[in-house]
Length: 203
Image (tube, rainbow, N blue to C red; front, side, top):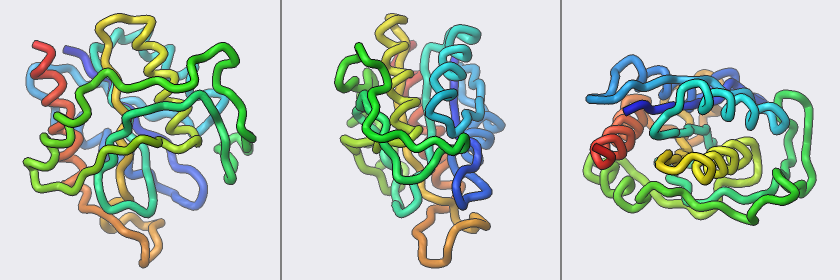
């Protein structure tokens, strides 16, 4: 089993990104019977799709698990759907702010994960970690990345993909005092649990 696990570089006012902090830790811990490859993605509407596609072509993963930071939540958020649209109120790291633009002019309006998302939710619940299933990954770079991954799944039968939004981590230096956080170890356990569950079910 080969797993491509992605997180994002810092963006906006955040000098750290919880998604990359967790991706690095999961890779360091390892997953039983699986090779985990961590990759840090750019917060770029124009660039992220090509970077992800190149990685999938290079590594041919069985599973792609993408992590993103979502300030304002205090639970793990499992994303079910990616929408064929880019829209933002803040610029990406290239200074770009899309205004209701399609990702692909000829693309399907929405794509759904091919991972059993409710089983993933139960796996996290069993660890005692707060988790919810979400039907909107937003319209920022996270959604752009997810759409690309699910499109690749349609091109590469057998590949699985799931996007997971994470809170800010407890003690994250650039987090404001009033923002909700989660212990980094809990996020690590949740993502490790998701990765292990998907890999076990594909044996």
